[in-house]
Image 1 (cartoon, rainbow, N blue to C red):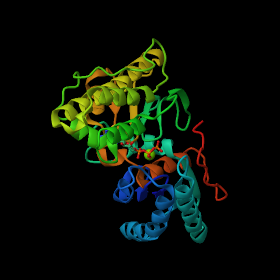
Image 2: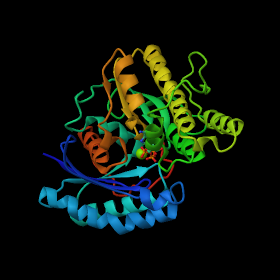
Image 3: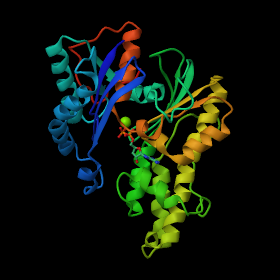
Length: 336
Ligand SMILES: Nc1ncnc2c1ncn2[C@@H]1O[C@H](COP(=O)(O)OP(=O)(O)OP(=O)(O)O)[C@@H](O)[C@H]1O
Ligand SMILES: [Mg+2]
């Protein structure tokens, strides 16, 4: 039995978890800073790192109560992310590992998101993903399709040339006068809207391209708002139609590119990861339209959390990694 303390502080959530054998969550505590940053319409890096400092020790103490204070290894997001935020988690994790003479396992944040699908959860009805699989990573900072033929082997097939899809949700929400974070706000606003009221463009839709681009979609919403004039987004039905049409276009690109990637690679299994995987339209379209097993993490595990980091670290230990106390935070750490 191996219990890993997982630490995630790459952005604006302090995530601390204890996971047994890479699957069983004994503790999973996430202190969200959403309210702190909402007043600024986005994450303020300096405030984020200061808040991690305030919360990290107390959250860790609370998590350790759930496992009689016994852990076998410490895992932490090494990058990518906000440098100040990463430094808090990495230095706390290394100090903890050093003091207890435990292995310290640095984890790539996106690899962590992928391992959310491996965790046991009452809402995980699709079981543990088997290799090989195609991964669709959709978050605040990433939009990419990746092949994973074997554990910890990744090839990026296509990524975004500009904005990430989650970033686009956040920016469009701001245009529409909706609160941060934009993804859940747009999903709520879209509920009573017509997804075909406005035809927004699908960038990079030319055949056989697995690249993404989201800045044009954001600009199309801006120009539509200008054309409508008179603060059109303040009219509830216009707002609902704009939100639904934007959401439909943003998600449609993801679904179509994923279908194309499955066809081109011949992979027969999909794992979805990242905060935008919480989107209900994306979840239902992928589940209903793909002719292969689809693993999407349960809603609470889509967002940043420590459990996914611990799960990834367990797999790393299983595959021969023994820890590295000299690892340092890297804000632009590459996956491959
Ligand atoms: N229901 C939803 N629909 C669409 N987007 C959503 C939904 N829920 C959350 N999001 C988006 O998910 C993003 C946050 O996801 P996540 O926490 O994985 O990103 P991040 O950690 O900031 O970025 P990265 O993981 O790339 O470093 C935000 O952009 C948010 O708007
Ligand atoms: Mg994330």
